[in-house]
Length: 98
Image (cartoon, rainbow, N blue to C red):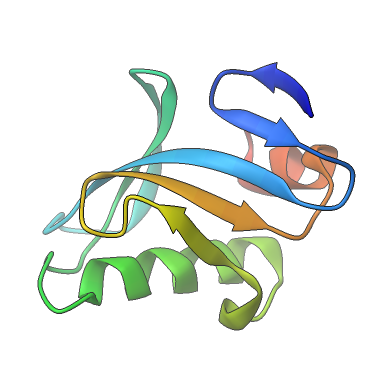
């Protein structure tokens, strides 16, 4: 697996991105890097999967994908998550501005 950064890996067909979320923010936005993960503030509460749903929808919109194409591989119950995205690493970096 090609891992140019600790927070980002690409295996040739799927990218894996480490995300640190901050729920209950005033707006949903990418903040930058924090503790080896891409930090994203979410304007959704961390109850009943609402923050996870908001994260997937936000990333899907930024990346031009359907929400069903993005999945949370690890950390669905915590602030630190690993997201699976079916795009090459260069596309993701460009579209997210990282």
